[in-house]
Image 1 (cartoon, rainbow, N blue to C red):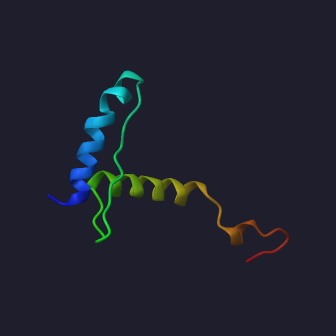
Image 2: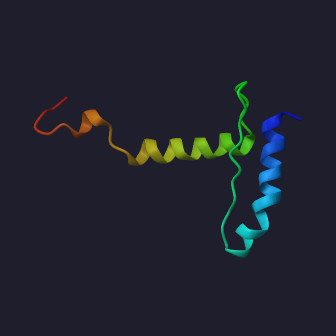
Length: 68
């Protein structure tokens, strides 16, 4: 088992009950130095990318008085 998966599993075990008791969702974000990301981390980054792409203006689009 890759170290990142082992770490993510440990984080879930440690925090899952507290999160459930407080009606929160715990998403472990684990990675290692050899470019491995836990599947939950990849899913979270994909969600963040979609939200950022649809909701954030680029610096270029914020220049006032100019048309690009």
